[in-house]
Amino acid sequence: MGQACVLTGMVLKTAPAGEYDRRIVLLTREQGKVTAFVRGARRPKSALQAATDLFCFGKFEAYEGREAFTVVKAEISNYFRELYGDLDKTYYGCYFLEVAEYFTQPYQAEEGRQQLKLLYQTLRALSVPSLEHRLVRRIYELKTLTLYGVRPNVFSCVQCGKKEDLHWFSLRERGVLCDACRKKQAACPVNAAALYTLQYIITAPVEKLYTFRVTREVYEMISRILEPYFGLYVDREFRTLPFLADT
Image 1 (cartoon, helix red, strand yellow):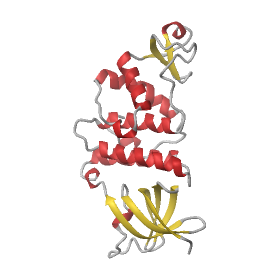
Image 2 (cartoon, rainbow, N blue to C red):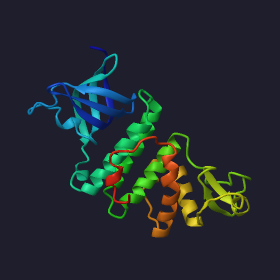
Image 3 (cartoon, one colour):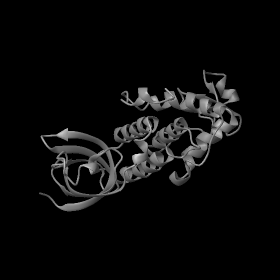
Image 4 (cartoon, helix red, strand yellow):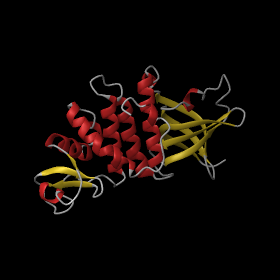
């Protein structure tokens, strides 16, 4: 057995392994995304049974092996049980876990730390009554793209660099266009409020992401932009996506 360590993170995936064990995928501050086995977690009286559930966030005492960790103890500080009491919240929460698991790479500590912070705040946002779940989804998707350096350019015209009259978004050019440059190609409209919303999501710290609401018009505008744009960087269908209320 390898060296002992403590990993602070969240369970992204969980599955049976062998007769009584569980295999989990953890997103951690210290090691990024890692695979871990929890011996005996499926036994009825196991102290680690609940610690292998999706969304569990806390400290996991583990030993590092050649290909995976072995968790021997866990101290869970947040189970996010409120997500299980509402089917809509559960689906959105599971979708966010899938996106995090898809974008993060194994053993990339800085990447994992940033995504873990974003994911934790996003799951908390699902329980804010004034926030629509579909808006939380779009914020999370755009901020995730920002973390991985593939966000759209919404600060200046992608053709000429102009910062005024940015009323159009081009999927092909992956950014906004001014009125003059738009004449050369197809693009979808974006008003000032929608443009500001996109800019705010990209630049705001994670702690201030989920502090605003938008009109239906603005939501629909940013959704028309982000839906296909997000798809440019995803090469598979997420299992929970068909169950989201806004799809």
